[in-house]
Length: 90
Image 1 (tube, rainbow, N blue to C red):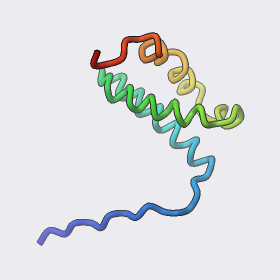
Image 2: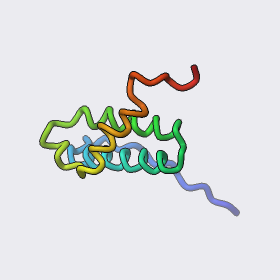
Image 3: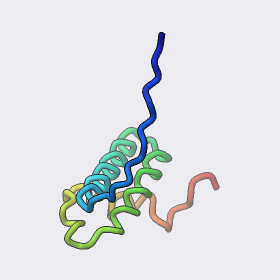
């Protein structure tokens, strides 16, 4: 007999700022992996989520994200996914 695992219940505890910083770094890394694999749509989605989290951080919190990730997010990916580019599906 095959057992299906129980669904995890979302916790009601507040998310710490350290967790937000970790999640932003994880999303940037995920976007870079998608970029390297030439999955532009997936990269765009991960980058959008990462930018939303990154922009919610203070200057001091942003400094805690590794510099290579910050550079990729702000400069290199902006070149290809910025507002000046034609959006997908048009």
